[in-house]
Image (cartoon, rainbow, N blue to C red; front, side, top):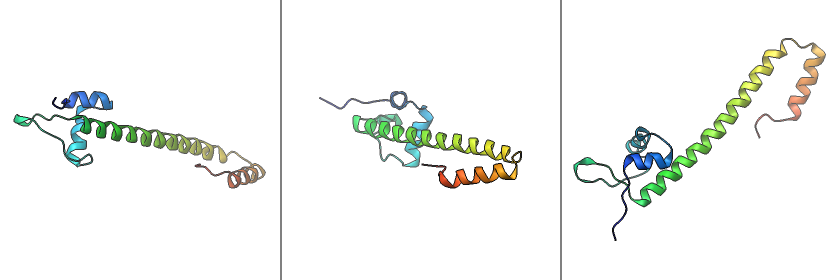
Length: 105
């Protein structure tokens, strides 16, 4: 029994990315070599698919973490905008609280 082959569109759908993203990952060499059929039509075996899906999931996790960091930075930016309105006593309290709690855990 031969290997099942997956098209670029099938791999893209399973990875929840565009076909162009799959092509970019291939051209950049991030995922190693993939098989090709005659005529230049790109096909993927199960091993390729597994590698691409794992890579897509790792990128998704990194994107989620980056999104959380961006949200924290936006919140911090908002806080700094409000600092101009605080009295010197209020600023001292705020600075003490900041020193006791790290921004990124």
